[in-house]
Amino acid sequence: MTQRILLIISGGIAAYKALELVRTLRKRGIAVRAVLTESAEKFVTPLSLGVLTEDHVFGDMFDLKEEREIGHIQLSRQADLIVVAPATANILAKMANGIADNLATTLLLATDKPVLAVPAMNVRMWHHKATQRNLERLHADGVHILEPDSGEMACGEYGKGRLPEPEAIAAEIERLLALPRGADPLADQPDFAGDALSVLDKLEPNGNLTDKHILVTAGPTHEPIDPVRYIANRSSGKQGFAIAAAAARAGARVTLVAGPVQLPTPLGVDRVDVETARQMLAAVEAALPADAAIMVAAVADWRTADAAEQKIKKDGSGQPAPLALVENPDILATLSHHAHRPALLVGFAAETQKIAEHAQAKLIRKGADWIVANDVSGDVMGGDANAVQIVTTDGIETWPAMPKGQVADKLIEKVAHALSSRPG
Ligand code: C5P
Image (cartoon, rainbow, N blue to C red):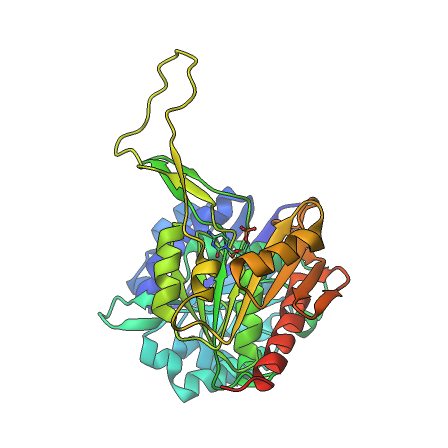
């Protein structure tokens, strides 16, 4: 059955991205009905939205005909999920306080469906105590919040508040649509990094990493072959993002150096996006010093000696491709000898056989303190569960299979414990 979104677009400069969001959702087979606030109409027109949604676009509560035919209660009941994107500071404030002074806010008050808010605003507005207070209240009310991205803003400032890319919003929408009907939204705690991370989780640290800086790498790297091709692997980034999220919830300052993945940035995490292994190494070194580094990225072992400037053409001769590969720098091993070596250095080892044995060898070879070893012969890469062994110089701990979010929480607990019992 086709799933239906009611998309409420509130009035910020990011509203123009709503058009792309509609197209992305429609491509994924999701039906979209749009509601525009009065100020959103200054940024996108009902006509363009109507064309893209192939539906009537709603805007004025006092459109009597619509009110008689459909009505605001009906409008929200016909959707599987209500999405507010972009959600301005203003609409978030109204939602948090139950204000219903236009169609959008009235149906948000009238709905019994799950609600996802995707805030976008100026960085100072985002960090304002009033906005954070409103977000906290919305979270407590069961509203899902997808955290904004960081970057350059339309207003010329730099920081957190950019609307996430349409692909990332669409991925979150699909995830929420896949949740069992009637599930308590508050029971929907993050179990992997693709989740909308709760503001409350950040405001109430669940560990003791306050004043610590935790550096995490995640995702694959892409090594260009030519302008259209690259070498990569199947890493989804979910485990690394979940670890970054867990560290932020534990109160740490977190730097997440991420390879190319379509995952939303966990709340409270500073994200640096990179493509290649060499860029990842540079970003990791730039982020030092850190109290702990957790290297979860599946860095490509090799890159092409020279990426071609033009697309390489096959010549039909049947000869092997003219690809000379060279080894990439090992980021983990580089950190272990670094002048600013973190007090705790954790590596991951994805193995398909002799898991513990290979991990022990890796611990020594790379100079790490712990290796988190996992068996990737199943569907761990890209999947949501993981069964790991923690290899340290003291021995091996075996954890049962659990969601990646739980692996992250348990690992961060262990990191916090290790850091508190180490000097410096
Ligand atoms: O050698 P292997 O790729 O199995 O090692 C895995 C561990 O080393 C992971 O923690 C990964 O993030 C890290 N690594 C790295 N730089 C590389 C290769 C792996 O940091 N070039």
